[in-house]
Image (tube, rainbow, N blue to C red; front, top):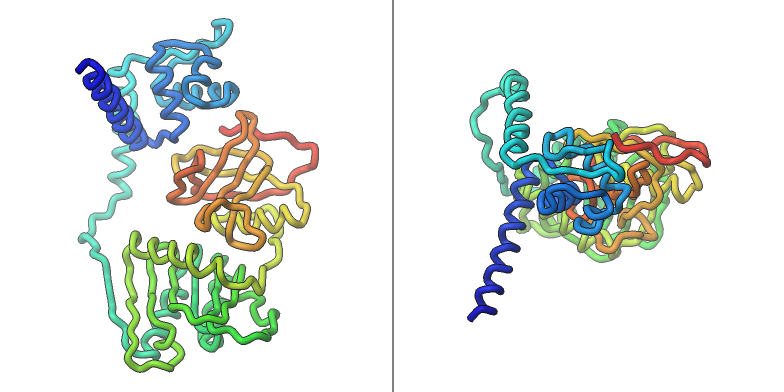
Length: 368
């Protein structure tokens, strides 16, 4: 009976810790920041090496995290002690500090808020080739950051001009051509995509732009080989994201890489994280010594040399699974991993990335 009660208490403790992690993440704390804060809370006050062991974070990185936690009013760093210790502020004071930060930005948020009617997801069934091509080109013309397109190769001339316009606007484009012939002139893809892959088999046609708008349907509708096929055009973020996951995981890996763009001049800033990852890969292969300055979703700036790139955009891939894209950056606070929007295994999510050349002997720049 006692063992059952202890086991239940352990399980309840795990549930409570999970709830704490989830609620703290709402305030913009990263996973490692949360683990460090919880370790300090449970100790009350401790030196960096103890916190490092409890939280599973390097000792050097504890100091950087502690500074950020202190700026949020959650802990106090006692630099006068030898060694330096980190002390948790009473939870009531910490919550008040977080609340004050939220209250401070409320007027600015109110000034920027524009009251609108709630937007509902839009779905449209498309039954004609002409309408499908029209919707496809309209979505391409509205792309601002990235576009992922899979169409029959015979349809490529009908979208080539819109693809070129998108690339000229700085849009990151991945293009998959299905039902591909054996021979092709790779030069025709210059300026129309960042990476092109070709596949002999037929695949559904799909376009996802900015993880927001999409169209997906049977390839026969676009090529005109089937009169009874349909497509669906939609604008709903989580559905478009699911279609993107299918594109990247199921079709992109099996197609043969035909074309890859050249490395761009540095410095260059990217709003689309996958675009930054591709260019980092190309510069890494070209032997460029370069670093990255990352602006995270929470407004933090991190900078330093890029030591590794994780990606499945171009061959050879360096990721563990198809949707993994990440940069490993060496900062003064230690090595950190950066992912894009929705990243779940990296330390930080990037809002933007600037790649810049560095001298070979230039060290890491401290994350600020």
